Image (cartoon, rainbow, N blue to C red; front, top):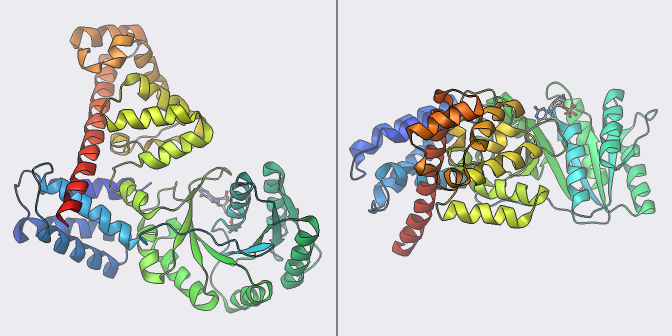
Length: 439
Ligand code: GDP
């Protein structure tokens, strides 16, 4: 996710390295680089200009504390401004009503049906009784797809394959939900390849008839600026409540995620990062900004770990990161947990510094084997205290794991970079407090 953008932003911040203070002159070129990186990532020009103007203004107004370098302070300010740009706080889906009706809209292929299934699974996990409704009257395959998903996640799917009237199907579905005690109805609707009036009319009528508590607009983030334009058109006709960004696992340049809130003024509520039912996340603007800046997203990682694994273990790791005590045992344990969670590259990007270390690599389960082999060849003392691993120990590790010295050296370097980044983040947390105290 956002590999290229993170890389370019990182390069931009580096141009400010080594200077003791932030001045109009030295910040100007860095800010220009940031703007260029955002535009390259398909962020709308005006949005990129506005946000970088604010970053510059903020940077000039703040004192550089001893604890942070100007570059680090600028990263922090950029993170704050990107967070604001993407909406500030997260916004929840509204599930008022009995049953609460959620209407899913968007173009064909955007990922509506897949998302409908994911949302059903997500709400079911929270203990809600859900009914999925197939209202895509033009594509029989969509109904079949929904039924398959429903079967996988154990959620009932309501459909009337012979009926070509979406409004009647939706009404019947809601009546069915009431009868069977379902508290949430998720309606998957028909999409077209491009916006057209007939589709818009149909979904508008559907919306006014079923009176949803939440209308979501699903959009493929890989379509960049088009995603933003389509969102605008849909919103003008449908006045939706929230956006779902899909396919953020692909080589999306990230522009849609960054500009959509600002341009359309509707919150992004969920992001989808893969085809599996569990690849759904609530959208947190602050965490997304951290990930864009290659700072990782430890909070989401810990939360995911808590969902799937031992809560105490997740807490222990988090505490160790905060105390700068993260060691190879912790690293190995993280790798093992991550492998079970799926979408490895994305998850690894949540570890501070890892996104950067993995840039451009093709990663899957097997990619971890060499790393695991090397760590497993370490003694408990070496894992606990990697600083003792000198040249001769590296040679032994290479022989013991059947890997090359080069691979051992790479791992040591990556681990060192990760720890440095974790430490920087911890320091920045301290700097934030200090800045807060200064007002
Ligand atoms: P719909 O026409 O809007 O209902 O779109 P679908 O739900 O059928 O999705 C279209 C294609 O995109 C399918 O092949 C999905 O598996 C795929 N897809 C949906 N969401 C994601 C995602 O977040 N990541 C990836 N990689 N593929 C996705």
